[in-house]
Amino acid sequence: MTSRFVLRRSVIGIGQLVVLLVLVFVLSLLLPGDAADVRSNDILGPDQRAAARHLLGLDVAPAQRFTNWLGHAVTGDFGVSYASGRDVGSLIAQPFLMTGLVAVLALALLVPVAVTAGFAAGLRPGSVRDRVITSISIGLDSIPDFVLAVLLVTYVAVDLRLLPATFVGTDPHTVLTRPEYLVLPLIVMVARVAAPLVRLVRSGVVDVLDQPYVRQARRLGVRRGSLLIRHVAPNALGPALQELGRTGDGLLSGVLIVEAVFVMPGVASELIGAIGNRDDPVILAIVLITGVLAIVVNLGIDLLGGRMVPRSREGVGG
Image 1 (spheres, one colour):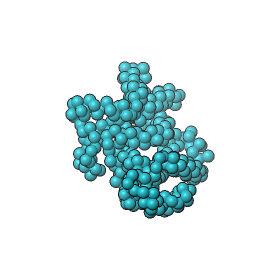
Image 2 (cartoon, one colour):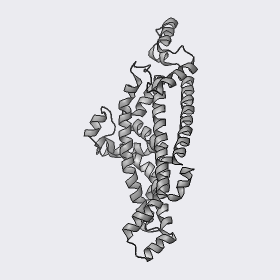
Image 3 (tube, helix red, strand yellow):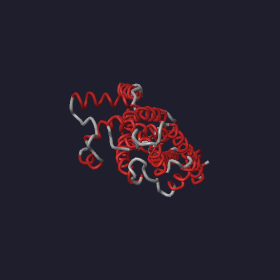
Image 4 (cartoon, one colour):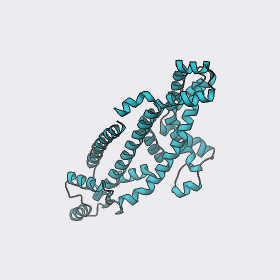
């Protein structure tokens, strides 16, 4: 049953990804000018511009260009960049390395922060600790990513000079040796995505603690640690894991916003540059890879959530 669920979700995800790629390609065609216009200048005449378009393959019908690119992309060949002439795969490898590093670190911090804070609030509902944690999570959830990022840069990096304000002049290797560059971006990403998860974990803990089997276990003298790990955690965290899958897009958009504010040499910077250069192969390759990652991550979280919460397995297997 699980294999059927995986197959169905994969087919749906691939269909959605193809639609997204078509939409992005059509929108790129609506932008003024093309890659030949960007690479040339006002001095070039019509013949030179036509030659540039022919050299880049822009004189081919848009539908044929897209299908040719997609046919090669499924084999791992993303084509050649219009702007630099480099292989697209090698061009976007380092930006994806930077973005992947930040995303993995954010996720590694997000889960323990959300679980710890949610449990701390849910174990004593109505307490001062619960009200403080809930208020902080609501406050952080109400602040847009870019506003929080700008505030941190202004006060922590510029005024107090405690941490670097931007990633200008760095690369993934520099970041690994100087992790202080990652502190502010990770705070922004974790704060925004963890805020709703904290409240969801808190709600799950409160709900599970009120179940008859938990009260009976307490009366039978089951130790608190065993009760929380074996009975409370699986049932309280299952919905939170599924919500984490649904907020995966929010995490991805948070990465892109953080990269733009802190001038990180990641996918967002590469995508913005590609849009400015009308570099369709780079744009489509980035959309394709991020779309595949989103499908895989969401599917994995759904499967994990179904295993943690027995009553949700029917939905996963059906």
